[in-house]
Length: 201
Figure 1 (cartoon, one colour):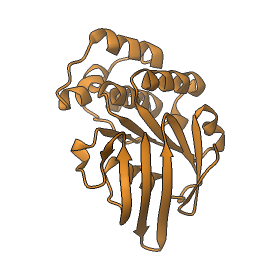
Figure 2: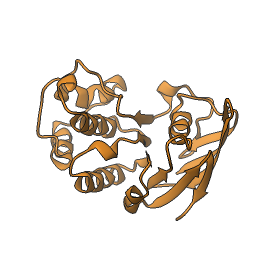
Figure 3: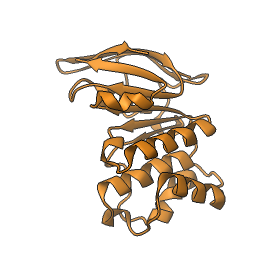
Figure 4: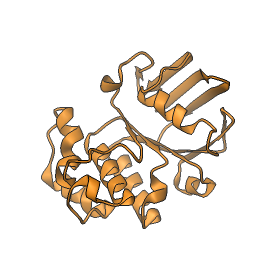
C-alpha cells in the first residue's frame, strides 16, 4: 500500500498530491505537471515541505534514500560500464541479497532481454529493459518508473510481463507517463495537472 499526502514548492510551482492505493498505479500528465517531482519525493531524492510518504506499514518521510526499499528508474538510471549480466544483479548485491540464477533467467526471458554487452553500447530501450529488470531483482517494496516505458519496443507485451512479475513478488509500482493511453494497464489511474492530482479510478 502506498499512502501519500505531500506538498512541495519549487520556485513558483507547487505540487500537492494525496494518493492511497496499491498495485500497478499510473500517474499521467503533461510535461511540467509534477510527475518527476512526485516520484523524486516518493523515492527520497527530494523531501516534501509538508506531509508524509508511507509504503506498507512504514513511514518513509524522513528515511534516507538508501534505506527506503524504494527504487526509482529513469532513462538515465543505468551504470554505463557494466555488462548486462552484472547490471541485472548489482542492485541485489548492493542490498546483500542472494539471487537465484533461475529467477534471473526467468525475468530475462519474460522481459525479452535476449542480449548482452556493455550497457553504454545498447539502445535506449534495451538499457531501460535492463534497468527495470535490475529493479525487480533488487526486491524493493515499491518501484517508481519515470517515463521509461515509452521508449521500449513491444511495449504492450513488456508492460504486461513487468506488471505480472511485480505482482508475483508483492511489489507496488507507480509509473509516470505523458501519455493517457498508457493508463490502460493500470489498476489505478491518477492525473496530474499543474501540480494538482486527481484520481480517475
